[in-house]
Image 1 (cartoon, rainbow, N blue to C red):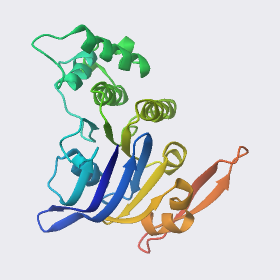
Image 2 (image 1 turned 90 degrees about the vertical axis):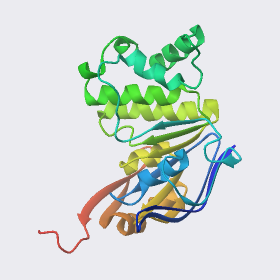
Image 3 (image 1 turned 30 degrees about the vertical axis):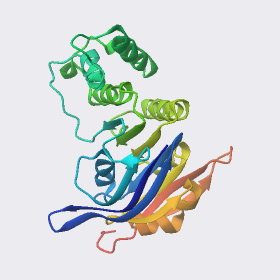
Image 4 (image 1 turned 45 degrees about the vertical axis):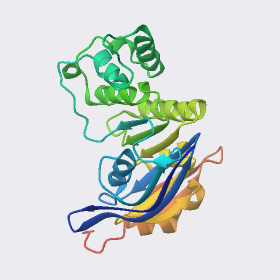
Length: 254
């Protein structure tokens, strides 16, 4: 099982948000998608989800996009605030729901809520939650559908450091356990290096680099992708950490 992009281009009117991208994500692996604002990250996951028209070829689980079960969590999270967390997560089972909610649907919801530590919020309404708690609820909705492909667009942007680590650990563990093809858009390069098996670096809609984190997240690539001078430091356990030092854009006042 895999997700393959061959020469994929996404256009919004005359503007190409994504240009001639070639990628492949294998089952049981996490692809971290990084790049500056406007580099095409969201357009890439929307194309795989079949939410925007695209040129080129996208094959999901050996089929054209749209024929494989996909769990998708967008940036712009929207749902009626009068719904409880349990109801929001249950919506992720729409493909399986019959005329009545079945015990196996509720069991699946409870398992995901427990896995993400959200059981105590099950009866709370969305408008009673913090932004981070709502983000966790929508992640649970994406996971409860039991997808073959998991697409997450900035799933940790509103979370504190502890919850960021917990969410990424759960996503990685479930990717391996369920042999998912997971594509995750992140801004934190160090979190990407730690939790992604492979990294795709985009700039202006084009793929600058794709490969193992240590091959992609280099000082030169960070400069090319983000206009930022960075330094690589080593922790006591050998973990590499990227530290941003300086903007390389000439118009920045000093």
